[in-house]
Image (cartoon, rainbow, N blue to C red; front, top):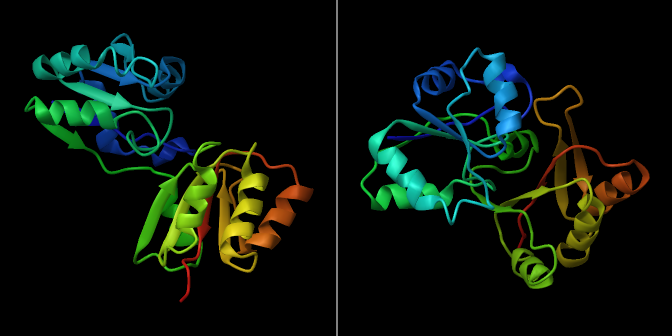
Length: 222
């Protein structure tokens, strides 16, 4: 059995009772960063001597070993925060386990884009999840495509590129396109700002961006 276990993106009280139970009973816990996961497990009195590293730098060459683990034992996968597989390692392992007839069970739980999307005030009945834009190659082509998507669009971004990204979105989507920016979701300094792309870019040009960001952009209106 492979369990996909979401972990809090901010407030540790967002951890579910079921997630704690699964991690306590797992034979092996695969973690994106064992140091961060050790702190989380300690907080909930979960033993961490079964922790093993699973991240983007070893997931290819260790994949078969991890699948064999899941064939013989109960394995739980966690990442630094949120749901594994959503802009985090996890997809390759899930796909390989499915092919190997290993049962996969994904627990419901924290992921950053859902509260940001609902909190944006923009339509959330249909949406397009983009995640992180390419840093360089293919970035402009991707923005050109997204400019015509008629659904609300969800992006992830770091504090180091938030101003650049909002500015470029204004260039490709139109500066008056409505959007919202949420940062530090479920943490002490959680904040959501709403306005046009131009207004949001100006705000973070004047105020130093901090934290991890979710950008929600209104879809193209015909």
